[in-house]
Image 1 (cartoon, rainbow, N blue to C red):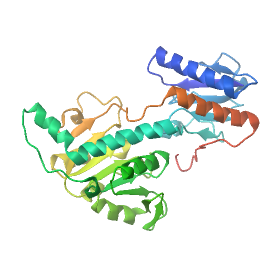
Image 2: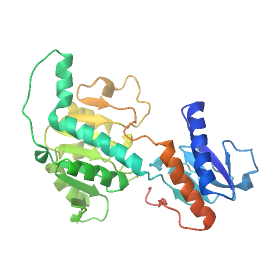
Image 3: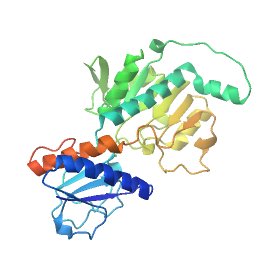
Image 4: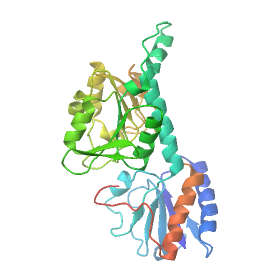
Length: 322
C-alpha cells in the first residue's frame, strides 16, 4: 500500500518523528507491506491509495484518482474540510485517541480548579506582593457547563464530575430543550436548554467541533447569560469566540477570567490584548497535543481496516463538519 503523509509540521525533526512512528505502526498493521511517502512524485499519483494528513496545505490531495481514505492525525478536521480541492467521496477519518482525551481532561480539570479556588487571582497577588486569602468554595458549589458531548467533551465532563463538580453537558441536536442522563451526567440539547444552563454556570468549558453553526457561538449574547464573575475555558477552536465580545465582558468584570488555548490566528499575534490582559491566561494550543506513539497505531489500524475491507473507525460526516 502506498500512503502519502501530507501536513504542516513545525520542522524536519517533527516530520522525522512522525515518519518513524508511522512506519513502525504500519509495519505491524500491514504485513503485506507499505510505503510511506512524504512528497508527491515518489510514485505515480495513481499508485497512492491512502493519505495520512496533519493540516495539509490546500490542494495537497487533489489529483489522486485511486485515493480511498484520508486519515487525519488531528482530532479537529475543520481546516481540512475547508479545502475546496478535497476529493469528494473519499472517506475521512478523524483522530480519536483516548490518551489525547485524557490529556484534555487534565487541562480542563486544572483550569476549572484554578478558577474555582482563585489561583489565578493569587498569582496576580504574588506579582504585586499582596497577601490576601479569600473565601474558599467547595467543588459542589461550582456548577460547570461543558459544551460538546463527543469523545473529548464526555471524557472532560466525567473527570470534572469525579472531582465533585456538578456538571452539565450540552450538545447541538434538535431544536427543543430536552435532557437525559448519560453516565450519571445531565446532557442537554437545543438552544433553549443552553440558555437555561448558562444562567446557573460558574465555569463554561468549550469542546465543541467548529462548524458553521458553532462559529462565533461564544458572543456577547451568550456571555451575558452567564452569572457575573463566571469563568470561560476555551479548548476547542478560537473561532468559537468573538474576541471583541469576550474582551468587553472581561473589561466590564462580567467574565471573571478566561483560560484560552486556541485562537482565531495562531500563533497569537504579539500585539493581541489577550497576552497582557490580567484576566486572561494564554496557552499555546497545548491543552492536548497529539502523541505520535498512540496516534500512529490508531491511524495504522484504520489503514489495516481499509486493506481488509472492514469498516473505518471515526469516519467524518462531511455535512456535519466532524
